[in-house]
Image (cartoon, rainbow, N blue to C red; front, side, top):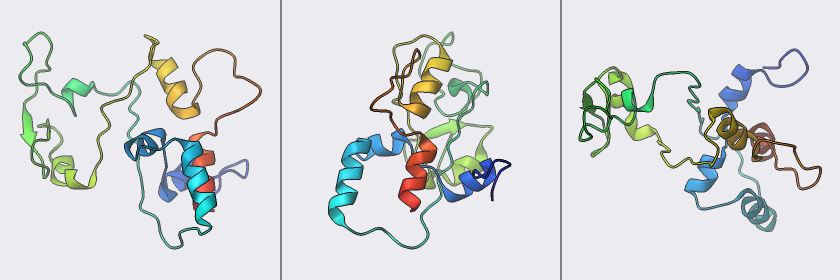
Length: 154
């Protein structure tokens, strides 16, 4: 699906899947390493790729009320909801997410994101562009998530 400016629409973009820094990081790769490996392999994968949906819930419910309840923490640090078991042993999520719990074996939860700026917007920018807040350098520009997906899908 195409958007108003000839670019893929958000729905079309998400339908095709998203490859993010989290996916590369979980594989132990940086983008340059991935691209070098792809070039040296000489072949591209054909066929349908699995879909990836990023739940980037800016302004959404807190992690301690959804995915990371911390039931063993002191009352002043944990949320009010109780954890429920999922299809993955050892992973619990909020009682308000039973349908998510039923398909947790198909998910990857990334709990290791970190940046040194206390503001959420700075973290958003870093995750989606590869750049910290401030002026963007003119050289060595990191590709955006959309560019990575486009490259991977051919």
